[in-house]
Amino acid sequence: MALDIKARFASYTERWMLLWIGAKCLFAELFSDGFSNLLDRTFAKLYTSLSHDFAKCEADLSPVPRYVALADGITLELGPGCGTQLPRMNAKALTHVYGIEPNTEIIPALQEKVESLPEIRPIYTTINASFEDEAALKAHGIVEASLDTIVCMQVMCSVPDAVNAAKRAHRLLKPGGQFLFWEHTANFCQLNVSGLWNIIWSPLLGGCAMGVDVETAIMNAGPWDIVELGRDEGSERPYNLLPRVWGRLVKVEQ
Image (cartoon, rainbow, N blue to C red; front, top):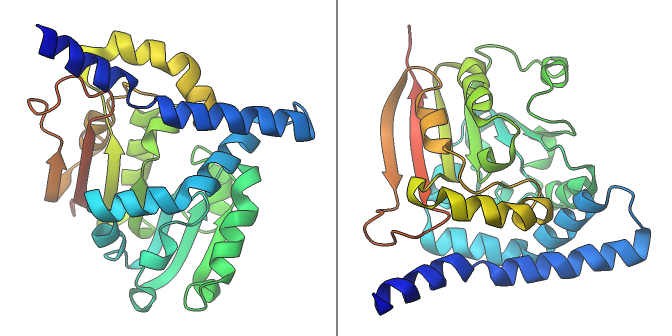
């Protein structure tokens, strides 16, 4: 029982450092520029300051670099943030890359990253809009069955409706197009704890919500051929509030 309590406590509190950094960013932004767009500014400051650490974590512990390198043709990246994934893309395999990013405050950092990559710069377009904004997508020719690849790394947790977002992604892909993702999903045994964390977690972390069943949303979005699918084993960390799921899915040709 003692070990069980210790394991629970460790899992429930392991994210406190990120929240502490987020809180410091919040107060720094509040005192520098007031309340205007405060939460977007807070997340932009947090994410850009930790982007190197996030990238290293992905490189060491995830399939993200390998997946991103598989993007080809006309590609849409959901929530590119400050452009962490761009150096991992194989420009020779790409026709064009669109990055749809709703946080206006992080766009300058994204553009700076694009400008620093001469092989990406001529083929990259930033769309400052939410993924729900179909008019913004359509303005760039992103319509049903128009995309070869969608890159989705730690994004579905922060969209307003993961189910509809996943269905939209499936619709936008051409038959044979690929959906590359690495996300955190729900631990159904810990939803009450996740809900409590979300009170402070979501505002500081760009709308990220623990407990979203991202895996089911993606897998039920439409017919897929599963090239690769993986997830954290619950038996290894039963109290994990952010279990990971990842995969490479191909839209079934009908």
